[in-house]
Length: 604
Figure 1 (cartoon, rainbow, N blue to C red):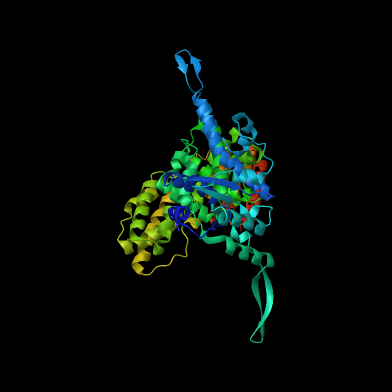
Figure 2 (figure 1 turned 60 degrees about the vertical axis):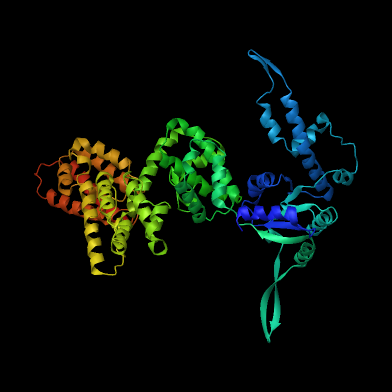
């Protein structure tokens, strides 16, 4: 049943049901049952029949008397709030412009006054609490034309059968309409029992004695049990809309809601409380960083990373930081990275604004070679289970997104190229616009892209024509990358510029897969023989900065080969140096060759 159908069914129950029994709405924790009651059911019943809903939570309640007391205060609360509102409307405040009849700041207080507050102000508004018998108090309350909603019945400390007896009494004897909100999985438990059937022993699941007693009492008390599946999309939209924030407005579009819904599925998050918690923390962080005017892509990553990370927190675990200096994908299941300044704020309530710029730079590097869940690419990559219309819409969005060079990670370009070829033959789709934008992005930003990792070799083709077209696409990508990596940023190959090389080495991150092989081998070795001992020492420091902790597979094989050729070329040139060539310089060159051998060993 949809949420609207459930509302209609409950309205029909209030108006037409003659069974003198209760309804039950059940779903696992976190599915949004309470949210549905507060934000959909109550307003629906008021607007479509003027029925009031009396909502009582049984969380931690340990006596039937306490339930009766809660019902009494909730019912009296309706009248008390009306009294408060009328009293406020009579207040006259002198102002420069004359007499003002109402204090605006009082209005919200009247609207949100609940049972807890009412208990403390009952004497002020004239409610008589001198009655000692709570049952008498309860019977003095008019529950006609109302729906009595009991939430969290499985979290009560009262025996469930005792509570169901209480409910049976008020529905059967008093004719009250009652809705029970539960997670019935927590009320019915099973044990394994060995039985013999046809001479063979086997294990079967049977209900526990307490569960059987519960089912017996339920059968007498509850006429219908409705399974609640919820409308996750509407709930997400309503939760986000409550913040009335310019930063959250970007998530209200259909495409953003689609993405969030898919993100929750990918992260196996089916508890709306997790999402509500994540929204609150994101809202607080957005307020902290408002002055920085960050781009949408960074603000989105903050939100999505917090949503995925919040699952760990709300299950009772606050894991230690597990990531680089600024980002962690491990804490979010590898889907979208979590920014460390967000982690620190959520854990310690301290915000380090000085880390924002470095975190953004780290994320830019990450995005060049890593994939986050992408709804558009998911449609293209899984085209076999989509529709032609959805595929063409996704391709149109991808074409538009490629106008932002880093929006789609370079690490996915090879896979995207393969699927574009497949869709060319399947749908006659012209991918020339997408292809050109991919090449333009690689030409301007592909200096650190790994060709090896980009063009995977396990693609399968159905025809020679497919394979040939993909091969042309692949060659154009590789040629573009090599052009972008040729003589990186026009390095001068002068000894004085080794300091500039050190700056580039300092910017190498875990997402960089090429370094030394980006440069011209012959020019680099010629430069080394022009260096004095101090400059050679500085060059060795550059290499140590990049490769000191390198490991197998971290860098492309081109870097290892470059080092091998560098050793050979240095050895060859040493044989032809003048007899009076400085022997300290030769010592440094020998040290360099030994260092290169060590790096090659690490990378192999």
